[in-house]
Image 1 (tube, rainbow, N blue to C red):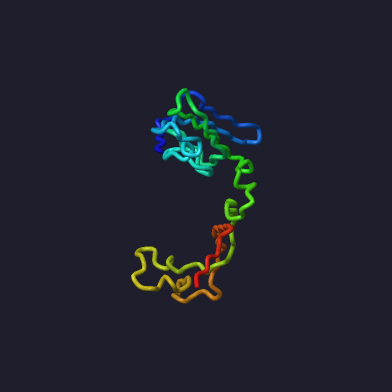
Image 2: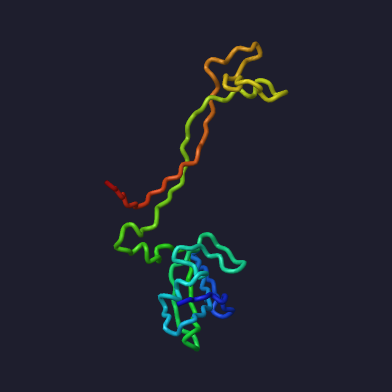
Length: 174
């Protein structure tokens, strides 16, 4: 009932990239079991075998854009030896979760953008010789006579905007 990862096979490792910048990697993990009745379901869940959706990080190699899209489990030369071929890709349309009938298994959707707004220029430029010791920095920019400019100078600021959409289950307990 125990499946143990012995390491990554030196045979079967590969990587490809095409003109559309789709990357794909293949890594073969060697797994040993202590019970001849263990099958592929037990072996593919062994500690050390990446799960579907995990980032490509075997050994010293790393690619944060590629994730596990499939695992192929095959029995080796004995009933105690197994090979798990893990395929990584950055073409996430191939992932089984995107064709799932369960909407809670769908991966979250991420979008990144910027939100532009105007702010008042903070007044901490009034005394460049020392940092403000009071809350004078909250005042606006002062002219050489010590009076605030009217209207105060403004600046555009672009702040990052992250939008995540995910299906969640609302559990209500009475």
